[in-house]
Length: 149
Image (tube, rainbow, N blue to C red; front, side, top):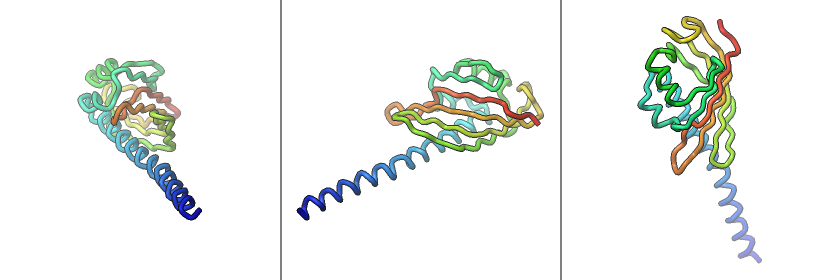
């Protein structure tokens, strides 16, 4: 009986350890790539975005237009996406199998040819990341302006 109890305790410990530590490491990975994507957008670095975004990504942008990855790259190259600052406050990260859903608030300061240039724009966002193999790719995004100051 003691042998069974010890084995059961070992199994329960292993399962508890797996569930307690698996999600935080995945959450840390998501936070890291969220920041990398934010920095790439801020710098206009489409080479980094190629590694972070799925070629099939779909974005409902703050201008209420659905855009593809090719359109995003073109908007960056032509100065339609250009920020002097971009702060992202993650409020929630949820996991459903191989999908991570990130929600929160962004505070951006557009510049140049970007809409609302020179103003402070506050928006809500949702980013959807999908894990394929060992890498996460952004597959969907929604950003909605809630305030322009």
